Amino acid sequence: MKRLTTALLISAALMATLPKPAAATLPLEVDGQRLPSLAPMVERVQDSLVRIGVKARVSSRRDPFDDPFFRRFFDQRRTSSKVRDVYTVGVVVDSEQGLILTNEHSVRSVSKVNVSLSDGRMIEGDVIGSDPTSDVAVIKVNAAGLSAIDIANSDDLRVGDFVVSVGDPLGDENTLATGIVSALAKLNSAQVHQNFIRSDAATGPGVLVNLNGELVGLNIAKSAQTAGSLRIGFSTPVNTVMRVQQQLVKYGAPQRGFLAVQVQDLTPDLANAFNITQAGGAVITSVSEGSSADDAGIEVGDVILRAGSQSIGRSNDLRSIISQQFAGDTLAMTVARQGNRLSLQPVLESATKASKRGTMIHHQLEGATFKERDTRQVSTNQEDGVLVSQVKSGSVAWEHGVRENDLIVSANRKSVNDLASLRAAIEGKDVLMLNIVRGNGALFLLLQ
Image (cartoon, rainbow, N blue to C red):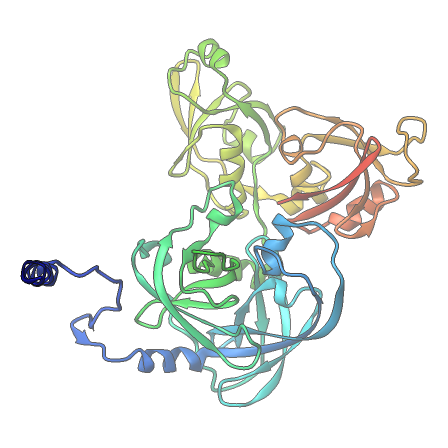
């Protein structure tokens, strides 16, 4: 017994000397100043936040990604819904012009909203522009004494930085969540969830700020909490948000960039034929005459190796990069041509304007050919629709899953009877949802 007691005392002494597990905590100082509380910073942020009320149709079912924004990408099943008052958070970014940013999915299909200011005033706001792709909307109010939030440079954000999320998940008052940045946005990624800042400061729609109270991101959604894991918050980087905001104020909808070329992946056989040793690239297969791409000197057979600061591994990389740019942007490109390396700088055109002038029916459907449906060509009970007569392999439409003999019966929840109704349903839209009859079945395709 005496030996056992001695052994326990020795073990306890050894345990006391071992280092304790480290835990992530907020820093005691910021810029040399002691930080006993986040309250002063939060109070400044709260002054710039507003509460936005709209009547919306809300689904009763919850998903792993339990936000309407992500439901557009990960779930197309029908659910029961009802109309009720919905509240969300907005943030004042320009006090002189009365500009407020909020989530597009929160104000979708409405032109006016009720805005509650931090000082208790209730005013009406106009939705002057919205963008489903980035989930950003701009509201304009006519009010004096607004307090605009300070804007940070989201490019300076690093994994591990402390952030604070302020949102309104319960619809009654703002809630705070602190955490760290766990992943940065990959703006040229083809994966939707990688286009956002990710952090464990998750409150759903709202704002993401740094410890100086500067806006670093606009919250989009939070993932559902699962066993053994925390919720993850998703936020659009503020640099992206502000570029979209400028487009929305000027045009009402973003004039996203478009390069009038068609491309395909650089295969090993093509690389040998072009005498290119670098792995990856996008081969130009056609250039629209008189386009900005033609003016910049891009030729059929050119192999795009770099665009902007990104290497091009396959044709989708180039499409993704261009989709993140706006009309009028200059895109620096490194091109391989007959054993030489060239630097070209095409100015991107407007994808929306390219569709309207007949260059294509829509930039998301590039590479597909359509015609009025002939009932003898497709065995289906549907009376109306537009038939996909041809799809070029490797084109934008092909990569989105559009195939020959698909019958488009609705677009963006509007019935499609002919080419005119198809154009009307998708005109000016960046994101398309097509209801397609294929063989004896039907499916939805989301093109974004």
